[in-house]
Image 1 (cartoon, rainbow, N blue to C red):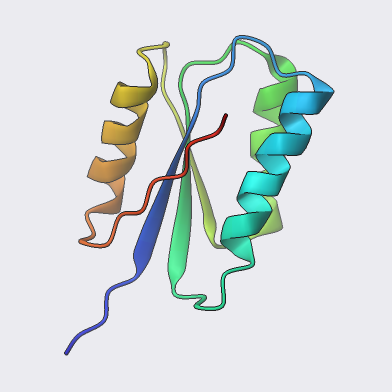
Image 2: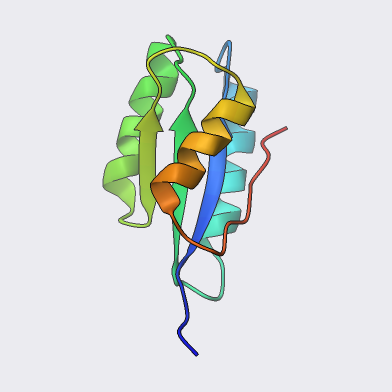
Amino acid sequence: MNRQTAAFIMPACFKEFNENQKLIFIKSIESVLNQTDQDFKLIIIDDGSKNPDLTAFLKSLKTASDKIIVIKNRRNRGPGYARNCGICFASKNNLPFILFS
């Protein structure tokens, strides 16, 4: 049986990105990165955020771990569209979703 890499899909749809939201977002990311089974990718989709703090944070994530892939939509289309972008990028059968809230 062939095993496929899981692709966790995490939309990042923030109108503002304050310290409290950042801490919760970091905890969500850490919960994925600390999985026992390390055969996965975490795909984070920035849904057209204009917030420079979020943009800088997501850029730092790309360099922090080779498990993290960041996709940036040009404009905000909502979490459903962002999830669909992640699915298209992942093209895997095992697609768990991470809801930030």
